[in-house]
Image 1 (cartoon, rainbow, N blue to C red):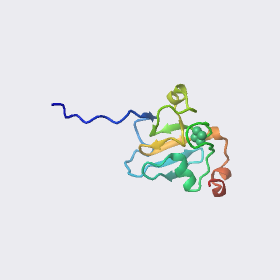
Image 2: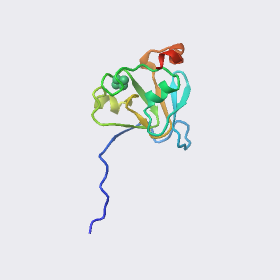
Image 3: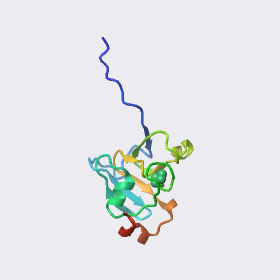
Image 4: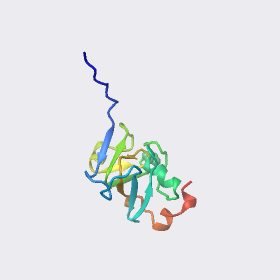
Length: 131
Ligand code: FES
């Protein structure tokens, strides 16, 4: 008799390195944002973009569902879950470490570089732009 449990559908997992951003273990993933060197936390299963906006950090975004690419950022350290088949992220981009923050769920502490968004620190910290 085969008593194996069926596996869940495969998910894409993007890893920048085997270590978390600070090397520690935590149940609450922390996201370090470069080039500003600011950190925010994410709730269980929360997407990185939504966690940032909820806590008053502005990151460029549009559709919030993986379709436009506006929230693209570089995963420098850590690991995220990405759903398969994202319209705005090619396989080559994913292989080069790019992620879509609206669709990325951190697996632990991560460091992301949002330099491509061309935000200055005042824009990044502008709570009024986060809603
Ligand atoms: S906001 Fe459009 S792809 Fe993330």
